[in-house]
Amino acid sequence: MTILAIEDLGAHLAPGDIIAGLDLGTTTIGLSLSDKGRRFATPRTVINRKKFTLDAEVLLAFAAKEEVKAFIIGLPINMDGSQGPRAQATRAFVRTMSPKTDIPFTFWDERLSTVAAERALIEMDVSRKKREQRIDSAAASFILQGALDRLSSIARETSGDRD
Image 1 (cartoon, rainbow, N blue to C red):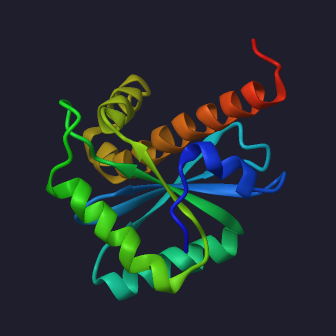
Image 2 (image 1 turned 90 degrees about the vertical axis):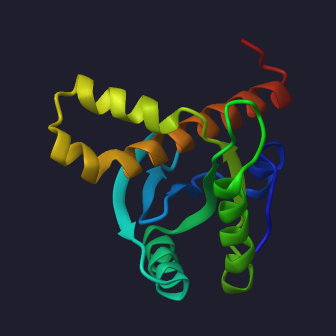
Image 3 (image 1 turned 135 degrees about the horizontal axis):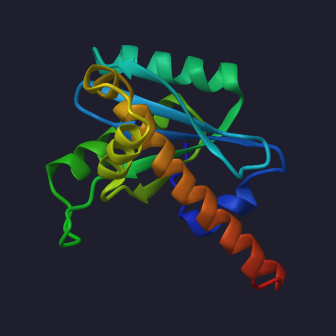
């Protein structure tokens, strides 16, 4: 397994490769998937966390079923730019996944992704109870969409087609 910067991820992927977004929480892992054109992120299910080994098996089974070629994982950076215990836990999760998969991980600053996801669910008039069930996948979708938009921007810059 490799950790790639967002600037290097596009070169690693073939056209049509699918990317998964992850929002790593203490009790759940929110999941989202890109389409094959890597334009849209769609929220998927959540993994209810139990033990790392079981969580890794479920995540890798999901990746195999959906033919995921890369993971974008939200890195919970503090508003002042520092990295606290949650960021350290996310980095440890990725390091521990290293011997289990060849699928690369890319860290993505997830500041305010949960806030944005909750606002979107409120605007859609989703009940409080259902928001609790969907918030992590919605946050994973916001994380992945931000990375997809950046990948698209990098591709345009590289091709010289600047809008």
